[in-house]
Image (cartoon, rainbow, N blue to C red; front, side):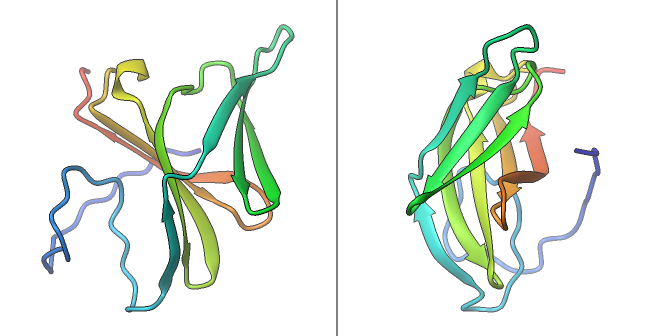
Length: 128
């Protein structure tokens, strides 16, 4: 995943207050569908010298997996899935106490189109 930075201006008030935020989603009403908070996003470590981390996300009868390096985040705070304009996504919030930079908030947004694939990450409130 490449690191990219974006900035912008808030042009509208949110529908309800938010205690923290991962990403801003801009869509027409009705384009965001099938929002399911409280989804299970599990983490397991492969045995062997590499010790890679595997993330699994189960939805309905399918399981999506993604393999990351051994230094990847392993403590999931929560996960939610949703569809945006016909594409499936899962948003993962990582536990702050387990983040290597002690970030107050850290998120990964993954695509579920065919496979579990990270497409964006966001961390803030970090002790850097």
